[in-house]
Length: 169
Image 1 (cartoon, rainbow, N blue to C red):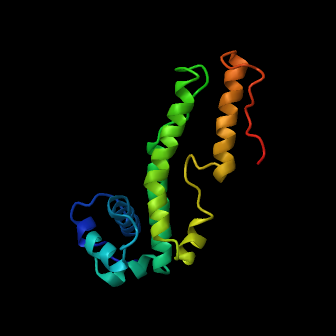
Image 2: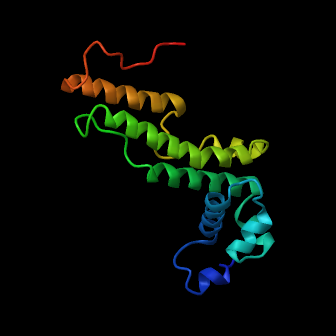
């Protein structure tokens, strides 16, 4: 027997399933208030469900929080927009926009991670998940910028002798 939908979803909550509703609620709380004081009880109250309902849909609180963290990161990354495209705007403005967007993403994500820093089980569940725009972590972001600079060189908007890859430390 599958768990009943919360009254909120039965009475006009749309097609969202209870699990999705709980993840969305937790992700919204993370976006609005951070993760420091986030509790299962607080999520349940905000989702208008009984505390125990969460365990009908998740094996553990860490699963819910990892899913919510992933949803938050996905929202932030997709909202950041596309990276600069060679040939558009100016060579000076594109990297500046890339860095500005990157800093905005970091300001919205890092505090959430910091609030969960001691929650190793959450990070263990979150680690294999992939969010749009994350690439392969730092190397993915570095590769995206290097590819952009290389493309600008090929268009002749950036000097051929300019390095498109960072020097090793």
